[in-house]
Image (tube, rainbow, N blue to C red; front, side):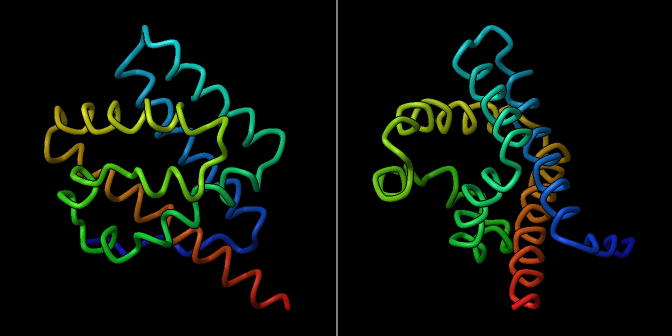
Length: 145
């Protein structure tokens, strides 16, 4: 197994890479549901947020990744598939985005179920990389204090 690439040198590079990977995940979901206007809208919103306010996506997604870091690092697929995320939606998602998130989560699970093991491994690697990028971002921010 090859050594992972070194982390980006600064937070600008970290945020750019984080957003690039999130865009890839959003595009992948949109490709699974090409005629779904809600998913297309979500993909556009993610891209727009990353363009207009690059930290917005990292600051929204990063804390969730951190919250579930143990399950992510353990590769606990069952945890993520069985979780309804109802409490998380009530606690941490703005009211205008709750219905969008509640719609997309089952679509992600449905798309996941149909993937081959190798494809799932690639997605898992991407989520671990997103968690690593978020942790690198926090470490850089902490170092700058």
